[in-house]
Amino acid sequence: MKILAFESSCDETSVAVVEDGKKILSNIISTQIDIHKEFGGVVPEIASRHHIENILPVFTEALEKANCKLSDIDYIAVTNTPGLIGSLLVGLMFAKSLSYANNIPLIPVNHINGHIFSSFIDNDVKLPAISLVVSGGHTNLYYIYEENGKIITDLLGETLDDAVGETYDKIARILGLEYPGGPHIDKLSVSGKDILKIKKPKVDGYNFSFSGIKTFITNYVNTQNMKGNPFSKEDIAKSLQEIIVNVLYDKILMAVKEKDVKTILVAGGVSANKRLREKFLEFTNLKTDENEQIQVHFPKMEYCTDNAAMIGVAAYYDLKNNSQGELKQYDVDAISTKN
Ligand code: ATP
Ligand code: FE
Ligand code: MG
Image (cartoon, rainbow, N blue to C red; front, side, top):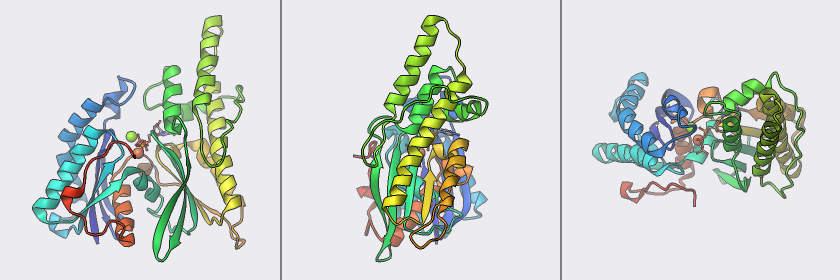
């Protein structure tokens, strides 16, 4: 079964062909990072215009690379929420038109569900699992289990304020680093020391809070500047990495202790982070309830940030779950926020 998938929720235009929910026949990604860099973040109107320019060539290349014709495609999947409304609309209208004109059923996909299922590409995931989605706009923790042949994703907790990727990007901006800041901070931190030793935010249960960490670092930088004292970007980067990675680690550890967990999945743009990957390998020293080693899976780099392959895989599991029933194209709308 072949799914043609579209992703255009933010600043990546991506089209993929996914076979049987596992095999990625093509995954073409056209990123606009270089265009938005000079503004220090994504400018929605500019993003929409570039999606319009990019979507046809990216779509053509994805079919060619997969060696497919439209007549080989069984379903069309498309991100319809959450994201920038103009950006979402470009992908959705393109996918809808193809679906109508060629009589191929349309499957709307939640972008965050896409990030969750990016962990299922190239991995045989043993359930139940804990999934952490750490991206530009989200920091969500899920418990994923199987019930009556269906895969259930239960939201355990989420950030009460800033997302982890957002925190990286905002601190990077303060340090004068280019957008997106996460990869720059990751690199700089290697030669830094954890001099700030930031305290862990006190948040009950599985929720997170990162805005206090951002304020703490902002105040530190402003104070140093006011006093005319130099500060090390490397040390700030290292201090940020340590506090963020430790907070995420602690919440997952709590879930592993409280629940039956066989696997830990980490997805979203921040899952590319080197320190996070290194620290999370410590989970493999823990045992499941059946005394087996806990497994930790990270997506390949190209599936960490936004891509259409993950949207196709999420659509495949949606179909397996039969969670949407019979959908009509005109029932599907673009929705910018998750609520
Ligand atoms: P969402 O998925 O919540 O809608 P998004 O799609 O913009 O947001 P992604 O594309 O999944 O988010 O991820 C982008 C984020 O990942 C940016 O905030 C970026 O700084 C961060 N990021 C990328 N690489 C790294 C890294 N090595 N370390 C830390 N953060 C990183
Ligand atoms: Fe994303
Ligand atoms: Mg992005």
